Image (cartoon, rainbow, N blue to C red):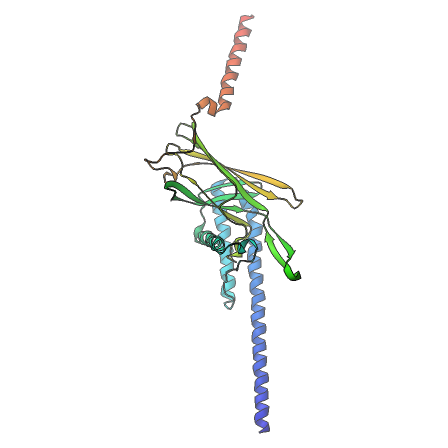
Length: 318
């Protein structure tokens, strides 16, 4: 009987020891896994500032796609080395994400849609750099709102600063939230025809209809320092060949100063972005002559006339 009791005790001790060893091993794997993820994010943050500032748009697309490929490869390697660590999606934590369930679902869906594009091969339709930031038009899709043809657009602002802020809530509980003091403030469009003449304009003011300032809140593997936003506006005039887009972003510096960064984009207009043959443009329309469109050309003409006049005066005085 004593021997049986001894065996039972030893068995319990051995089982507890095995469970403790297993828990220790899992905890060790978790720490190593989190370290591997942190290294992947840090590498991405170290590489991308130079890429964001590249003036050549096509070169930026190539280099940023390469940086994303490396980033996701490192995440995959980490998950393969530590299979016990699942790829979970972060639950909404901020006060913003608790405002409305529908909004939370929309934010999460927007994040997932862009995340899938990043993994599949990121090719922004339009892009511009300014102030160390990079603004990408991720996608533009034709839709209809109120019976009118519109473009549903998704934008990504890369390099958006953020910081962690501690706040005290009810019951003396202290919570930490991510604060992103950056936002898009509107878009303005100038439409140019095939002859280089200004044809029409349009403006969309205010913040995006849907904004995600911390995508990792909904997708833990989302690349860091991104801000996502959506704008919806009329499809472009059918007789326009080129669009000039100006986008403003506001941000707050560490000293508390508010700064505005302006992005400029000039690009041909794809046919899919234009109004249909039977659609009517309802925005502002104006015809401007070539001389009004190119004041520098006017100045050159005046300068040539002045030179000719001086030569005539000089010849006459001989």
